[in-house]
Length: 408
Image (tube, rainbow, N blue to C red; front, side):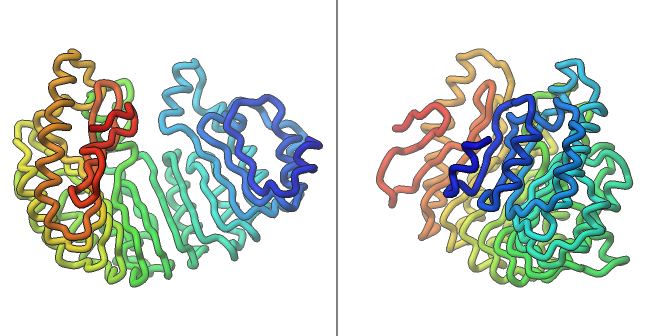
């Protein structure tokens, strides 16, 4: 406690371990004017494991002059609760009490905010003003219908955001709630965004009618990552909806948005057949002259389809200003993540991936004059990671695998 007061040069505190009596620590942090940033990492289970003490009132009654607050929870935390034989409603109830006390007090000063959807006091947040808020990230999932409406109201109350990320898991097979309402029933209320990330977006969402003339980054993604589904683990995936976009839906969103300054783009989609995404990829390569980073997650609806990765790479060569490319092409001969396959099968795929598939794709994309590297998603038997294949104009190893450290 006293140690914090003696370190005036420290402006950020990160809680990344479990501890049992956090309220006095948090209260002390908020009382120190030089502490402007607090982050709770995935390993800090403070708000779900411990019932808030009565002293929490002292925090809720005092302002929290923070400029950054991040509360980051594990993607699979509800599964972890069940493993620990905990009911979801109890830890969520504790967490909601903590966040309801902490978040409102920082409304007038916070610039960067990362919070979970399940337990954030969204309606209370809507009633406040957020004059400094520039970066907002909301993760987790919806608990009920009221939260969808509360989030819509909250987003409409902070029109000056620069960076917005909403990566929420879905439940129910038609679960694509809009963030700002339908394009036919409401007006866009956010202007000036530089970065927008939406998981499993609704193509008719009014969020895609905003003024995007200064947008630099757009991500139409998935949460959790769709490739996790390839392990067919019903214990996990029976709870999640996967309303992944089609290439036509991705294209309809891009055509709605005027993004002359876009330099980074991520698309996640499910292709019905070979060539079904040709129009989409052609549009991307011809429409965004400043695009320097492209990330594609292309999945096959027909698991028997052979992926024509050569054709896809050749289409992408028309994007002349690319510096980096990430490709998850759902290769037909990939054993997939979490497959538990024989070691011999895994070693065979690793050799093909490193010695042939990666170099072959990079050789095609060398036609992009400024390209530095291509990253391909590699599925080991029990994990997935990006493996980097630098182009020949950048001397060094042929590939860089960040997890096992091997280079050649």
